[in-house]
Length: 284
Image (cartoon, rainbow, N blue to C red; front, top):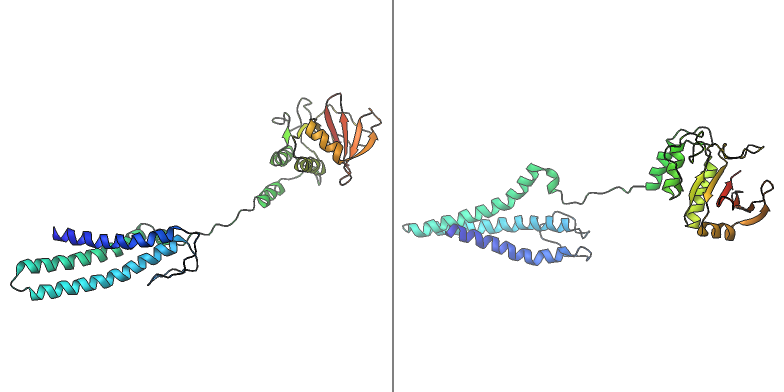
């Protein structure tokens, strides 16, 4: 019984010390400049791991001194209690309690180190930042283009999706032969860039409803949908207001009278076709 009483007293003392230490290390945003005697971790940072490690090292250091003092006390008491078995047993209990306390302190480290050495590493791991934009560029650059300016359906669909641009019925339209689908196959990079930039600058809803699929009129100079120079966008008030207030009006298209606006930065022509309520973009 005395053995457990002394062991309980030892842990009560340790808990009392922790009651003063733990609140001070829980506020990680506060710079604490006071070092812990016997600490082995740098106190230049306020990481809780450093203070826990230093407190543990201090506990080993202080516990060793206390255990030595208790063992000496127990040894002296044992020697002066010759002929008094009760006092000698009490002295043995003091010695056992001191040794058990040191064993518990040191044993915790050795057990954790045996299970996994990383558990005793109190330094927070360094996490390398992820450059999402670069990762996306790398994934896009890995796609083989159809030629120097035209890319396949999957690449163009990914770029538009990443920019938040919708594509009407693009799911199974990887070829240009199905007029019922919106094909992005072979759409030119400059055309995709124009749509992506429009979405970014406008901040409105942008949905591609026409690409390189069959069914569009073919121009005499080859600047048409089939060759990837054009894209149709569903008209809405936000998109229409942005185009008409940002780009310069350049008159009417000769073939059908559609009113046109020009992006002077890229040279793209935006023609509004009211009969189908969409914007026809030509990127030369």
